[in-house]
Image (cartoon, rainbow over all chains, first blue to last red; front, side):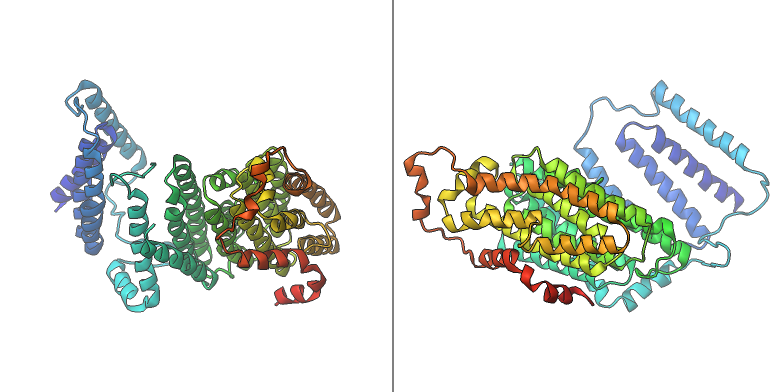
Length: 173
Length: 348
């Protein structure tokens, strides 16, 4: 179990360094997938399975996909990644920073100091995402309808703003 | 724009304001404000010119910044006090942040720079909605929050009156002039808010009547700058005779309606012991009066050089209905004798 945890944390940090050091948005998005995958596995291992599931669905499956499509329009000829010396040096520098920060900030390396959910003083809260969503659909009532109307309106407003001779951009003429 | 789209957007504008006006929870109030922001964006971009798109994007960025500040302050308040009630805010920092966020939403100085430029990019009807309807929801929130730092509100109010007057002095475009006049009037409203909230509502209502008259007058005359205003006397002599009076009412001169809110506000300020503030604000209102006078001068008090055929548009029958404009102008000129009942209307 410790080895699995170590592997996931290692992939997490490596992915974060990849997001920070890659100038090409395609490679950065790929590293982001690695971050999300390992982070969600960590989260699920600690009991936050619902949040991990929702993150995969909405973040990776919705937002990242839209980002990737937008980025695909801006393809460049000479893409630099970890192969070039400049970027690999930057990535190594970030890794050094993380390692140094870990050494500085860690006092007792044998203590377990994380959980899912936040407790602050007397406000105890555990993993309540699933219950929260159920409450939203159960007790929201007409407000839920108003919220859904707001989402629909934003879609219609965006469609209206890009309607024109050629759809796809904010129309200026 | 397709009529289905138009009706959805106008319905949502009404829904958003109604949600904010009737909310007691900060998240619901924020939702109403966001609905208003998004619903008006396609209306602003109707003209599809680069200037209109620029105005739309500027408006969007400013409004979402203000809404994000509002959300941050309300979440901080929920963290600090444990509840989300609008009227039960207890900590001074979120209160101050919410006041500043709502001031940014309204266009109060010193967060006013976006308002005249955004107004300049719109046609008159959309500008009218922006100046009147979009002010209702933030004001309802400002009126409900508990008293905050009085220095903040007085500063916002006085600087707005000053900047509204000062900034409008150098303008020839009518929409920018109306924008600066809006900033000045909002300053008057904020000034009195912590002492007598009914007077804020009175000032808001009178301002809405007055500015609607001006927007509709300019829409009828199709006048966008002072030069086109100067030759618009040929279109409707009746409107030309009334426009200077409406402008002087905006400037706050008795015996017109615009005098009523200023009078009541100055009286209340002196009763509260803020006579220097009252005097300085009244003097700053003179700056606005100057450019209202300049507009009435151009409209009716002088006749610019013109040739004979150009003085005949009044012979053509205009198809635009003027019933609403007539009602608004009547209200903006003659409500002062009814002051006691008008003020009683707002005292609750």
